[in-house]
Image (cartoon, rainbow, N blue to C red):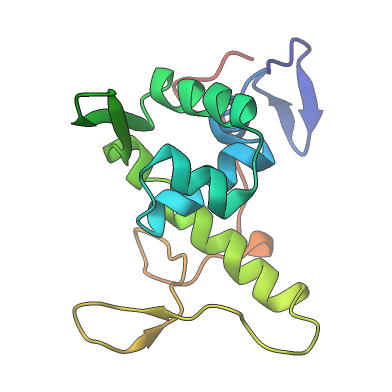
Amino acid sequence: MQVTKSKVAGKGRRPTVDSVERVLAQAGDAWTFLIVREAFFGVKRFDALLRNLSIPPTTLTIRLKKLLDSGIFDRRQYQERPPRFEYHLTEKGLDLYPYIVTMMQWGDRWLDEGKGPPLLLVHKSCGKLSRPVLRCGKCDKPIRARDMTWRLGPGATP
C-alpha cells in the first residue's frame, strides 16, 4: 500500500507514506492480525493455527510467508520426517503487542454487548489484573487523541 499524492490536513502537508500505512502493508489484513494474535496466545504450529482460526490452508500459507518475509515471524524446524516447523514471533513481531492490546481494549469498550471483556490481562511480575495505558514518554501522562498533534519527522517524504 502506498499513497502517491501529498496529503493535506491540519497545518500542512502530510508525508505520502506514513508508518501506519507501512504497518498495514505487513500486518494489516484480518487474517494476518489474527495469526499474530494466536502467536501471542502461544500457538506456533500450522495445524493449530488452521484449527483455531478455521482459515483456509492456502490463505494461512500465504499469510505466514508474508509474516516470515517481513521479519515478524521466524520459522524453526521441530521435526525432520516429515519436515515440520513452528512459527515464532521475532522482536519485530513482539513489538506488535501494544497494537493487539489497544485493539482488544477498543473492542472491550465498544463491542462487548454489555457482557464485559471476554479476556482479562494479568501482569506476570505482580500477578494483578492489568489494563495497559498508552503514556507519553516525556511527561508520563496518558495519551488521548485530542491531546496530540503532529509534525513531519526525519523520514517524511512530503
